[in-house]
Image 1 (cartoon, one colour):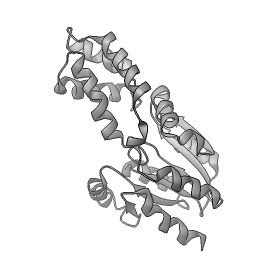
Image 2 (cartoon, rainbow, N blue to C red):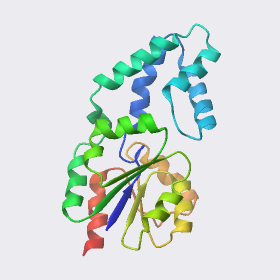
Image 3 (cartoon, rainbow, N blue to C red):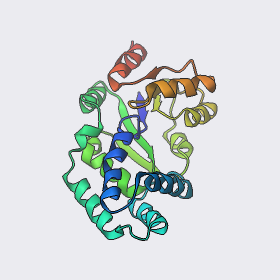
Image 4 (spheres, helix red, strand yellow):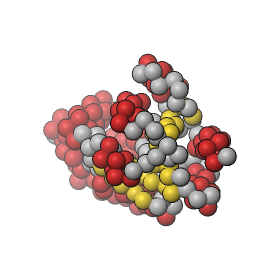
Length: 216
């Protein structure tokens, strides 16, 4: 059995991470409104792949008093000194290791900017747990096709539209929606897209029972 996991919001508390490092922008001389406005603009231009330095450049365009180099120095210090275990669920690594022991092949498939995604993966300990890690800037469809997943394999994700697109292409796959930060909001979105048949959970601990049913 192969289990493919998304990273952001699925295994990684991205909203909490953003909340923490957005404070650095304020220290460097800008306001919350500008941070969020430029964040959305930057993501749209980069196709969802976040880059801190490029975000700083966007803020500088809106606020000439923004201390760009200072913000970058703060971010580098933040990445070096922060305990990234606060951004994953307690017991997450233990669960993943147990799945490997039980014979599962674990794949981490994430969309985003290479540098920051790799830092997240390394600092959380995921680098030492997953059998295969893939970071894509565009669609995940090509990688899923390459994996040649079958009816006993799982795709664990938080994005409803993305999951719908993948299921249309790979209907034999088993799907689970896992959102550790926006569970209720995600459930409403999935319902509107007629994905009610897919289990929606808010903790990796709840995934065990879903997977164990497949092994029996």
